[in-house]
Length: 164
Image (cartoon, rainbow, N blue to C red; front, side, top):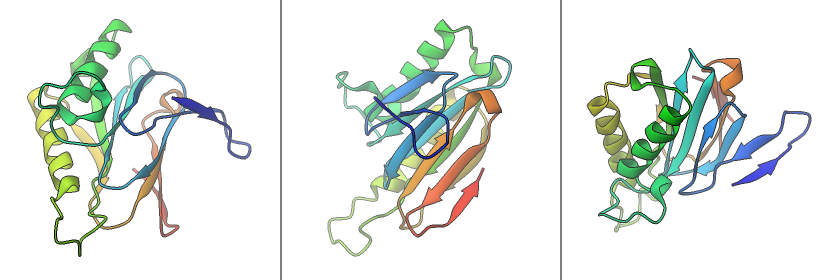
């Protein structure tokens, strides 16, 4: 994890590929292509978590739990529970899951598989999805500040900006 301070915006923790963060601090993840930015928010406590998930399944690997959909959700829930959060108070938003190389003959639909894996994990824990911006063929940058509620800002590689 690194920190940055772009322009006059508050300092945000940068969530790199395969990383995650839990807390009340502003968070950002840059360059989500086929990766999924999973954001969990606990509105009662004003805290949340963000992961930059690269692949749908860990296959038993435990070295970088934020890298895989199955291990990222579990580690985020564990760390949120340590701060007093319960899955029944959590909501989720998803960003990313693009098909960056649609014309590549070796396309494995990683973006779709990542989105499906994250959604299945959230469903198994009973965590509702309150918003998503997934699919397409453009990369995205996502920003989230738990202290300001559950607004997630998205900037796409083509310059379009939105909020979910």
